[in-house]
Amino acid sequence: MTKTTLVLGGTGKTGRRVTQRLAARGVEVRAVSRGSEPRFDWADETTWAPVLEGVSAVYVTFYPDLVVPWAAPVIREFCARAVTAGAERIVLLSGRGEEDAAVSEGVVRESGAAWTVLRASWFFQNFSEHFFLEPVLAGEIALPAGAVTEPFVDAGDVADIAAEALTTGSLDGQTLELTSPRLLTFADVAAEISAATGRDVRYRPVSPDEFVRLAAEGGVPADEARVLVELFARVLDGRNSHVTGDVERVLGRPARDFGDYARASAAAGVWTR
Image (cartoon, rainbow, N blue to C red; front, side, top):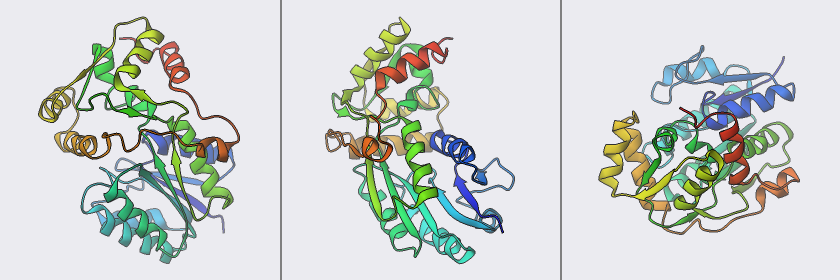
């Protein structure tokens, strides 16, 4: 019987890329989301069994974020059902420096399956997909982030490592911290995008309340905006202001740099109205 790798959040920033990389390796993939068939919804347990049928490995991304208090118990129940259904390996996408996310990491480690935890920094693609695309297009990135530095990471690098973890077993039992090679402030990010596009894109520090209002005006659901604000308050305090070599160690090549991402995105017309 052919074994299937399940990708939760199959239309998301990493899920979409993980699906592509697994397919390129000849792996049978079932990428699911709230809009897929079969459908998967963390909040609807009746959708779990159909997606778990015949699955041998699972890439777990959690919506809206691992910091919400109900994440760990839901993930615990899902992992128990996944292992019962035959899943032998679970790879969890987590976040760096998030105490609440660490609780869910522990759940996966104790699931009975082989496991890998990928603690990712902020994705480059946050500025070209979903959250911050509209602000970049408008010329102003307004965030309650002060002047903190962050080692943003490319979602493609995360996907490359996830595919390796899901298919080879070489990363079983490891917790990896995934970063790019360079620390940047959000002002630096705006400057990099400006240089790549030839447009004036600026960063403006704002209060959490103003960010929620601006996010809502930009079409981000209020609950997602509030989760983001909570994340800002918890992790954008300098705790993650250091880079690691885990991407290079696993992939045998340097992690992608934000400048390369910005130039490629600009050339693709992502930031052109």
